[in-house]
Length: 54
Image 1 (tube, rainbow, N blue to C red):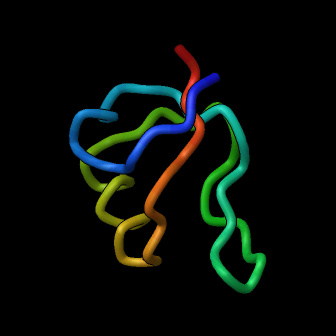
Image 2 (spheres, rainbow, N blue to C red):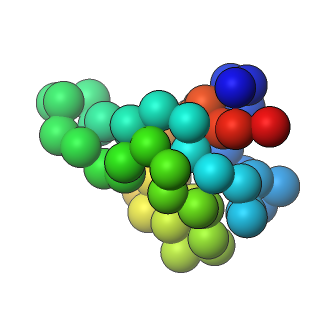
């Protein structure tokens, strides 16, 4: 598991930990495969870094 900056380079990678917004609301579950749309959604919620599986 690695912590990476969110961007298009992570498309196709699998999220290693649940991702929450600043209020603690679940945005994405562990195991979700990142797509361009999902990366854009996380950026909308100002997520900067995510843990991904290697």
